[in-house]
Amino acid sequence: MSETVIDTHEISRIYNPDTIPVVAINQVHLHIERGEFTALVGPSGSGKSTLLNMIGGLDKPDKGNILINGTDITKLRAGKLIRFRLHHIGFVFQSFNLIPVLTAGENIELIMQLQGISKKTRRERVHQLLTEIGLEDKIKSRPAQLSGGQQQRVAVARALASKPQFVLADEPTANLDSKSASGLLDMMAKLNKEEQMTFVFSTHDPRVIERARRVVTLVDGKIANDTKNSFVHIDK
Image (tube, rainbow, N blue to C red):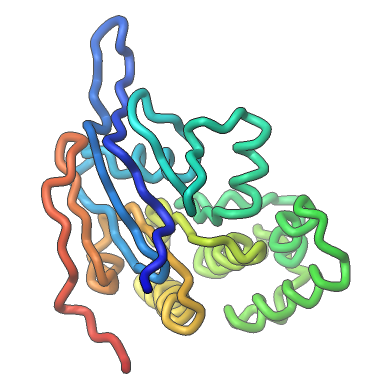
């Protein structure tokens, strides 16, 4: 049976409601199941990043509800929402958002430390993730000592460290060259296939769109198209 991970109910987000209203998201209903590899696409200003931020609890809809595994995050108080994000949602940002003074290993370990996971388990998980992304020899390297592609792989490992129910990635390949972007997408596709990890991307990048198995197109804050990507090759 399919398992619903994300369910938005007629959500809307309106900026500057008292002056010149800007409707960023307009009554969007989006249903995502476990194991999906979905790209939110559309022109600049279409609302895809706003939608991603609301799903992740970084922004709040003015109308409607967002259910994550049955929990309505729009009704959670600030403290509970922070804890919910910490334990359930992984984030990958365009700008990497690694902490400069921490090593690659420490950046990955931080989320688990906040979760109260034991030091032994944290270290084992860091080693496992760095090995999976091919950076086991960079555990003591700080972000400034890593390439853009390496930093983004560390950012993905950090997002996966807490074993979230899904990962939200906002333009994760925007600052990467073709080789780095391809390697990153290969890694995420592998995790999606082997561990049924759910990924939702906000992207302009055709390299991401080509890999996505579902493409949701937003125009003026509304879903204009929602299709399965029949051009993707999926190994059996």
